[in-house]
Length: 493
Length: 95
Image (spheres, each protein chain N blue to C red):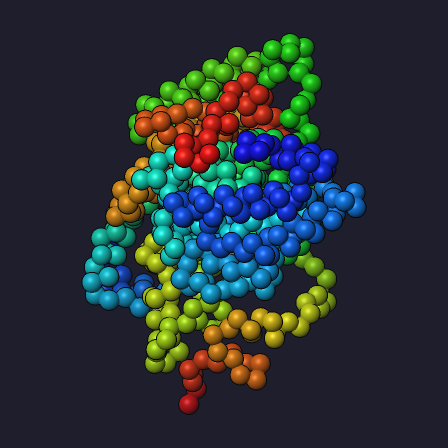
């Protein structure tokens, strides 16, 4: 059961070999046993989960099941879920019980999925290690002295430790892909606008995108089928016809069965293999590229000349938008309010000083500064122009290739507390992931081997706009030929 | 470019975050490190480049001007720090 795909679980449920109540209880028991050592979940509510599971069982019995009906899923604590405490990893929202559902939660609930719990994260999704949250660090299931990556580290660790069959995450600069890479599982950030941001607590609105975290590409496709879709409540949600993201997974190979990816041109950007990339990560990624070639794909050397500017531009745009978005946390309408204060301005200042952690304050200060009088052109506007250059690099590249591949993160999981005192070093870990957010492109990470210390390495796939199905197909074919995605951390049996 | 201590305090004031002198000193060092990274942007010529806000350059959707929300103030105010008679309470602003 631990390595079963969502489709297999769905079959077991449909054939009444297993009930959703049993499946949910099985995972609740695993959470109770494994979570104290991993800190991946912030909230579990067995009564609420089991009530949903019973409803799912009734729905299955009535013959009204959909692909995810009865499957327990973990939600990143950034997604509002009605009646669930939703903290976004912050003291500011420590007691916030959401009065409504995020679009993503609404969709998954409507499909009959069960909410297994809410997962830990970096505070307001600001971080690459899931250490900055108010509730303490998530531990990597592969080595509990190391980080699980971030900011969706709780969701990633929950899936890696098989506490949840799949989970939701959000990705503003790599927050789905990097934790997926560091914990040996799969994660996908869709094209910007494919998944509604309604009810997803805002960090940087022009970059934020929700997406699935799961053990395999096939599972990601099933999750995305439910998570994606137009929603008028998100002003940047795209109005497109519904897509079956699983449609191409088993696409009939053209001709040679041994080469299911014949015709696929993989662009390998030279900038993603330069200084700063760990040799262990480079070796695993090289081996994965060789495997893709075996499956019939061809490799094309490409260049993304402005990729070095993606981290600087990202750390202007994301904090600028965050400083605006987080101005809503003022102690008036919801969330934390300082216990003692003088006038209104003092209430704001004390509430925000006490309610936000160090990394969030740092980014609000950066954002406030770059948006302040006289600096807008030099920073925010400049960054938006560089964003265009970065997007153009990709447009050029996709004239020569269908997908881009490279490492997700320059190193395997690093030690807890090893980077917290040096924000710039931590920011530079986002070197390969932020470009896809800036350009709005879909990107994913799949496990492709192990590096130093026996820790997982992630392969990143970046697609052209709306190329999710093509990416998932390539990843699925790779996973049919390899078993990295089935490896499970020791001690999580 | 580098931020002085008074500038850090001014930015914190603009952001409505109370900051002690010791915190401001730490923040100053960290912010200046971060701005060193950000300054790399100035190395590239962006003359004539149109700023990009959205991958598909989508424009804001408009909708018909009619009421779509229902009154949920009681529900929403049930999680507010302080309310009275349907109003959010804050310290007195006007004498």
